[in-house]
Structure formats: structure tokens, C-alpha cells
Length: 201
Ligand SMILES: C[S@@+](CC[C@H](N)C(=O)[O-])C[C@H]1O[C@@H](n2cnc3c(N)ncnc32)[C@H](O)[C@@H]1O
Image (cartoon, rainbow, N blue to C red; front, side, top):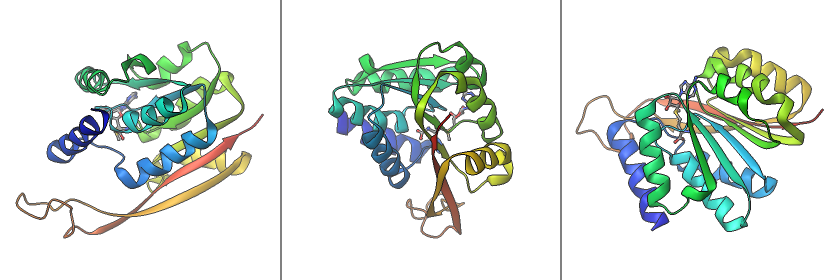
């Protein structure tokens, strides 16, 4: 059932152009979760739950860990909740609605993994909002670091203070006209990346 829901969510994202991580980056994220074996992951930017499902699949296989995921759009959050329920992982996830930089201030328990995939100019504010709850060490993963100008403060901070590595992905934009090939093979190339950092006090 889980795999069927994940496949359907991926198809819905492609069809409706809902932003999602996509399988290549999701594999990197899942690998980071597997390595860190976190007790509590906080995700900023749920959308309809694609990346959340990848995270939850690892937590389920590890037999430990929970996810708090935050989304500003109530309709997207509602769809994500349905998807988590249908995939049989709703008990591992707490889906919250609101501005992540505000919601994160209300989390009062240790967080050992932070995944940033919300509004890009909000990454540093989200990091600061949760910093007092981060464990030592904690894993930080940030998507879309190809748009470095939009998250300059965050990138400058993690790259100059912690062990931090950029993982680059070649990707193509989807074709502009409907009827083009659904894999986006005719779109121009665009390089994007994920920043994986190990936070230490
Ligand atoms: C790139 S999408 C997330 C994709 C998702 N992580 C996935 O891979 O399936 C970004 C999401 O962040 C949400 N968002 C934008 N600003 C936000 C904010 N301030 N707080 C929380 N969510 C926000 C958007 O509504 C959108 O759904």
C-alpha cells in the first residue's frame, strides 16, 4: 500500500506541477535519515507529502523516530495528511499548518534532523527558530541551494561554521507546452543542489 501511495503522489505532483523533491534528491534525503537515525525530524514545506513519505518510509523501517512537518498552505497540508493516512504512516507524523519560522519556535523538544524545503528566503529564520532545540550534533538538509542568492545568509552560516557539503543534481525543466514529453527531456538544463550540514555547538 505504501509504495502505491508514494507512486500516486509522485504522479499527482508531476501532473499538477506541485513542487516536490523528486526521486534523486529524495534518495539522498532518505540516506541522510538512515545514517542519522534521528528521534525527531522537522520538515519545513510539506506540500502534499512526497518528501515526507520518503522520510517516513525510513523511520518505519528503523522502527523509531517521528516527523513534524510544517506547511503554510492548508489545502496542501490536508492532502498530505490524507496521503500519510493512506500510506499507513500517520502515527509517525505530526502535520502542522502555518509559517514554519513561527511554528518552529513552539517546538519544545530535542530535534536531531532539520529538512528545509519551504520559502527559500526563510531558511535562516527557520534555522534560528529551532536552533535552541537542536541536538549536538544534528543533521541539517536544505534543498534548492542552486538558488544561493535567496538563502545567502543560511548558506554562509552553515558553510562557515559547520562541516557542510553541497550535492549537485542536473535536472531539466518540464517542457513549456502540454503534449511535450512528460519527463521534461526537451527542457533546458538547470543545476540544483542540496546542502547537507552537521550542526555542532
Ligand atoms: C518545494 S515545496 C515542498 C516540497 C516537499 N518538501 C516535497 O518534496 O514533497 C515548498 C512548500 O513550502 C510551502 N511554504 C512556503 N512558505 C512557507 C512557510 N513560510 N512556512 C511553511 N511552508 C511554506 C509551500 O506552500 C510549498 O508547499
